[in-house]
Amino acid sequence: QVQLVESGGGLVQAGGSLKLSCTVSGHTFSSFDMGWFRLAPEFVAHISRSGGSAAYADFVKGRFTISRDNAKNTVYLQMNSLKTEDTALYYCAADVTGGSYYYTDYDYWGQGTQVTVSS
Image 1: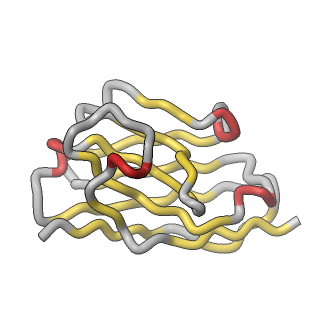
Image 2: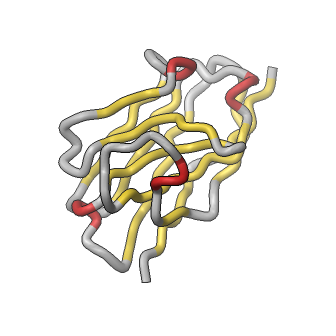
């Protein structure tokens, strides 16, 4: 059974930073492309299974960075220069097929971690 567990959310002031983590168990992590989404659900970032390519929604480009450590079965989302409009529940998701930015193509989901940005 594949499980994804996010962590790292919290309350931060505008302009601050947070780093989200998502650890995957129950399957070979390196066989998944990984994505981060936020409600409702909205694509945020994607990283290929090798970590060799990444893509971002326009509204986070230059501020967020997705990365992964296949040895630790973990994907990260470094969030800098946070804005109040980044407030949301953030989910990580795993895609078996790969190459998609659409939430409907993702096979496994975590429970979400709340990010709240105050002004």
